[in-house]
Image (cartoon, rainbow, N blue to C red; front, side, top):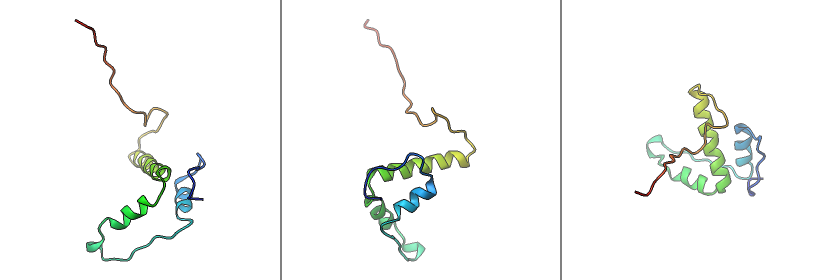
Length: 88
C-alpha cells in the first residue's frame, strides 16, 4: 500500500515502483518541446517523504552500479571533517 510509510527493506527497484504506482496511474501525453517539469513535480509531491527518499536512494545506487563502483557499508555515509581546537 503506497499510502503508509512502511516499506519492506528488501524491496528491489522494480517492486518498489510497481508498489508506488499501485493505487493511481499517472500519465501525460505532450510534445517533448512543451513537456516542462510540472507533471514530475506534481507526481513526486503526491508521494510520501519515505517513498521520495527511497526512490532517490535507489537512483543513487543505480548510478554507482552503472559506473562499476562497489557499494559497501561505508559508501553512502555522511562525510565530515573533525578538527581539534585548542585555546591559545
